[in-house]
Length: 166
Image (cartoon, rainbow, N blue to C red; front, side, top):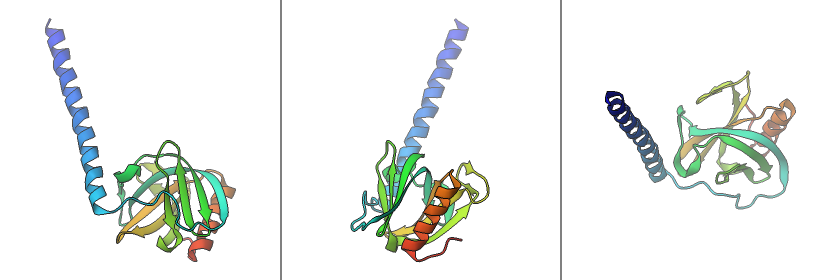
């Protein structure tokens, strides 16, 4: 009987902690949604497609704090994606999540790195696209495993943004 009571108490505590974590996650997303508007699902004027590759969407973070994941509008979910570069910008189609687009005029810089929030790769294994919306600056991190595809993506992003990758 005593083991049963202890098991019930531990079960209730576990459920309490899980619900607290979910509530905190949702509260953070709601706060972020108040800070900036939803990124567009598609480019307004895409132009012709320059490149389409498979990539891993790692995260979108604030540009000045790569340890704070953007949870608003579903941007916090990591997963497979197709990165499509058009003359008008970058379109990310994420598996099971809402797509979003970054207009070429919003792209501020492109860089490669080895580390971002909860992800470590080989040197220059993560492509970071810094962009701005509603006076808020973001960094979107993509992982492209194939070296040729990674070079093609960087080149296409440099072409549309007129910026050289760091």
